[in-house]
Length: 440
Ligand code: IVH
Image 1 (cartoon, rainbow, N blue to C red):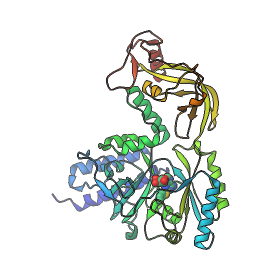
Image 2: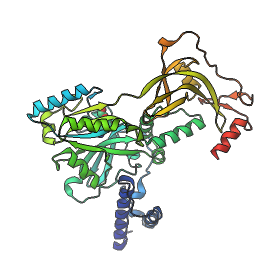
Image 3: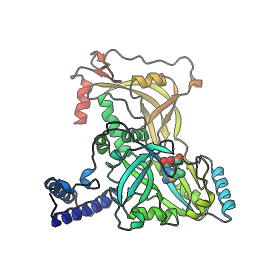
Image 4: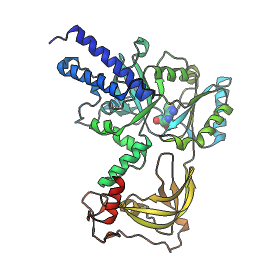
């Protein structure tokens, strides 16, 4: 059946509108219409596509969830290798880096300073304006084709918002991450179901993009910041990022052009105390020489570009004492061991409890009552016991055995096959009832 001209135009027009409002909402965080109006547009498109299935194309906003992969991931060769960054925790080494840049360029370099997002690197390739491939970094030369999952991320345009031919065939690279709230909720759900927990948002994001079924990624709310634009059109990295944002890509607004290394340090310092306030994890700053001509002159080593360095923030760890290990019973009866700590300040808040997740974790870390432990609270994670300071053991520490009976109601605790969690199987256990009421 041929599609009537007016229908074809209508479809094109609605898709354009949806793509634009999607961009306003997910990329710029500045919606221009209500959710209701957006849903109405989408509904109208779905209904026309139903009537004229021939109008459906892969770049339609209705096509974010595609088919499940069956044979595993295809490998993808990166035409331009995906390098990693040389990194340091030391200010002196950053000063050295700047001196090297000055020496090699024969003048002061101009820098762009960005946040180092704690996620995983991906490459997105657009042909004729349409997203055709998304892949992981892999070993830098060859990665996995994860297009099916990339398409579910709503801040990634399925079609760029431009008809400038020069940038309709473009590759951008960025960092996929899971927002901290999403990570917490996901782990909470997994804990309740007795499924293994993700150690941090980065692992959760990596696990999600490696699913064969795109529905999983669709409902897990991944996001992205683009940090690299491979295009001949621009002279400078900063301009390329700004331009990419105008054509639909999400770029982190926290970046700064710096004329010298003092400006670089001022900006980096200003983020040390603010990092915990971000809704996503970051572990330092990335300093990049701005002009592409300068970048080319400086070149790369086998692994890293010579024109960039990551200035990492130290992990926020402190030591404290485990005063007790108590059992917490959730609304579904799952028993979680929790360490009660001598209160201690870490990254801006006082911590007096830390989850030990489950008894497998407890055994693996071998945390005992009386132990001195390292605890960590990155901006990204709930306080966690990282490890025991074994040197501080006196021999008087007490091991906690896996309980056989519920400490509250005395019912037996069960462990289902293939579950890490231990549950109290008495649904009338007062602790469970209380947790259910709290949840309600
Ligand atoms: S630029 C040559 N910018 O950190 C690599 N990377 O170890 C150019 N990352 O693989 C990468 N935030 O996954 C760049 N603002 C940022 C970044 C960033 C996080 C990741 C990226 C890269 C790794 C470097």
